[in-house]
Image (cartoon, rainbow, N blue to C red; front, side):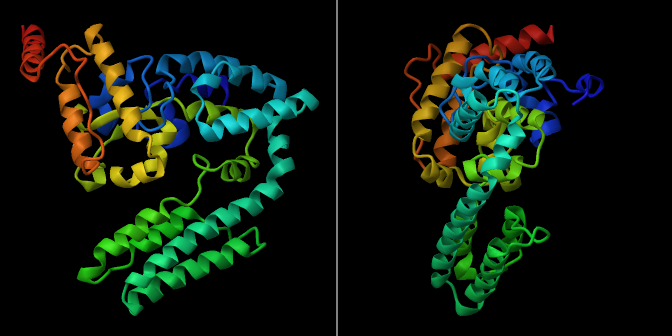
Length: 343
C-alpha cells in the first residue's frame, strides 16, 4: 500500500479495508470494547492486538524489502499469533536463515505444490463427511447435495487453472436447496459441516496456496491482521442478533471471520477450549471495568453471560465471582453514568 493510501486507513476501518470485516456502522456500539488492551480472544485464547498498534505496524511494514525484514517486523507479534499464523512464521524464519535477501512470496511458491495436494485431501475429507450426512435425507434431497459434492470433487482433482474450487460457491449452493419439513435440521447440520472446509484461517495448506500469489507486503499484513481486534455478534445479525454491546464480543479478526454464521454450539465442537477462553475473556473485561475503562457498561458482564449461555445451548457457563458489582449495583452504575452525561 502506498503512503497516500495509508492516510485513508484508520484503526476503525483497517479490518474492513483489508479483511472484509465491518468495523463501523452496524458494530458502532462496540466502540468501548475496541479501545480495550490486553484482552484474551474468547475464540482462540491469545491476546488480541489492540488497534493502537496498527499505525506503528504499517510504518515498519512500509520499510520491508527482504524476507529478513518481514520476519523481523512479525517477530514483535509472536506471542499474539494464532495457530496457522504461528506455523507460517516458523516456516518463514527457516526460509530466512537460508535466503535472507529473498522475499516471502518466493518461500510460499516453493512449497505450494505439496501444500496444494494436502489441501485437496483436506477438502475431500469434509465433502466425505457431508455425503455421509446425506444418508439421513430423502433420496431426492440427498441426490441434490451429492450432485454438488461430486462437482466439487471434479473441480478439486482437476488440473485446470481456470476452474478452481471455491468454498464460498459451494456454501451458497447448499443454501439453494429447499428441504422437506422433516429434513431441515439435517440439512442445517450439513451446512454447518461444510463450514469446516479449510480456509487460510484454519489450514496452513490453504494459507500457502492462497498467499503464494500475493506480494510479501500482503503476506506480512495478513499474518498481523489475523490477531487484531474485531467486533463479533454472538447471535449473528443474519439470525436476528441485535447490534448492541450485549450481543458483542471483542475477538481476533481470524476467529470472527472463520466462525461466519456458524452457531456457537457448533463452533465449540471445532474449538472445545472456547468455554475456557470465554472465562478468561470475562476476567479481562472485569479487570478493565474495575480500572474504569468501560464506564457506562458495567452491566456488560451480566448481559454477555446470559447471551453466551443462550447461544451455546448451555455449553458456556461464565462465572462472575470476581466482579465487584452485583447486577443491581451494575445497573445503578450505568444509570449514574448516563445521568452525568445528560446534564
